[in-house]
Image (cartoon, rainbow, N blue to C red; front, side):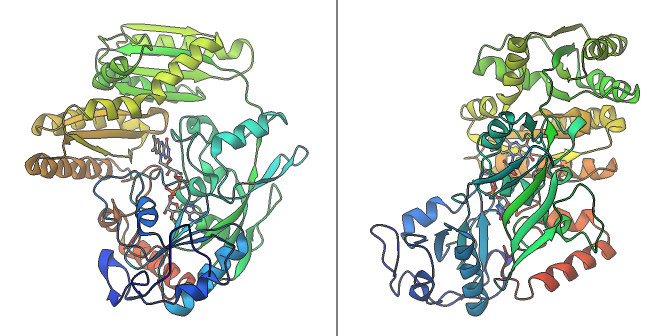
Length: 490
Ligand SMILES: Cc1cc2nc3c(=O)[nH]c(=O)nc-3n(C[C@H](O)[C@H](O)[C@H](O)COP(=O)(O)OP(=O)(O)OC[C@H]3O[C@@H](n4cnc5c(N)ncnc54)[C@H](O)[C@@H]3O)c2cc1C
């Protein structure tokens, strides 16, 4: 039997009774873990309660984490397949995990589950300069892959804010986005093939290695964004781009969000192809300034960060066009620079939003609910006007940043997590923002996923036909309902 240090598999550690907590199926919490340990790599199975608990949550607030039966830190694909065969035989739920940086509770434990962590499968298997592809294991950190590809003159553009800490497997399972998506698309635009372990332990290859291919249904696409509900991704082939050129970076300062929103719509309608178009409201700018010295103007009502990586003089021309449009829409100041040090500083300021918010909320009671609605960018001005009305109706604070070029905004509801009334109002505000997204023809989640946090809202977004198709596919692929039960599809 193999377990972590100081851990033993005992009657206690196998638990007792059945469970339906967190919306999952009735599960067997008396599964014989020693049997599982005997077919896994040494030290892969962990039954130490403290270690299991430390792996039981992602970064989302207000998402319950159940009491998992065990943690498996898979060392190879055989471990993953063995876990799934065991889980199917003994009706044990399985929650697959990468780096647990998710913001929807999708990687949280459910009662009686095996937490199947694949972060140790972190090898870059192949980089092909001719085909411009790479093959990687799911635990490779996005930033590490970018560094490795750069040595071959290649790039993998998707760049979630968690680029330095999240895994490619997690990125695929959530179809992660980021700042460059306005020009370079999201994770799904790069995935060519996946090796997946299915619910019964079968290992199968989906998709294709080639640039084109239409043989049969696109099953790889089905697994992208499936949040661990259809299978475990154990290998990924990505299509790549040549190394991206250094960008010219500009900043526009606006008196309010509406004028910034109008600028985004008008600039994109002009045929511009910025490689980044990000927005922060005035409250966010103030928090970032309080967090670090990024030189952002304190008096900004809103700030747009724009980049162009178009070759030669075209990059500067794109930003000159941005300047003209921004000033027409009421910008008080627009400046840009082709100095890489300036670019890095401004992008660092945008990436500092998350820790800056964390620092700020620590002074008001620690509550932060990050929303992720995406609306047609033509409706951003309306979105901001109605968001301001929502903010004014509530005593909790709302601060907004996001990927404006894609219409994908992250209004954060900031509140006192120790005060029940404040928590209740925060949840109400959060819900009103999702409803606003739907009212404007948008979606409840542009990139963070549904997980546990938004599962009740998924049913509002999908019509009856789409819901029935989703349920039917889930049942066909995972007939026992053991893969991440209670998440996304409820
Ligand atoms: C500071 C910060 C900034 C962020 N910025 C962005 C952003 O800009 N854009 C964005 O899209 N997201 C962002 N996120 C959210 C998060 O980082 C992404 O969702 C990321 O893709 C999750 O990767 P992970 O490895 O942490 O996966 P986890 O959190 O471990 O898992 C996420 C989901 O994927 C499933 N999963 C993980 N690995 C596999 C696998 N190998 N096979 C099958 N299912 C799997 C899990 O079951 C779960 O449902 C941010 C998070 C933080 C903390």
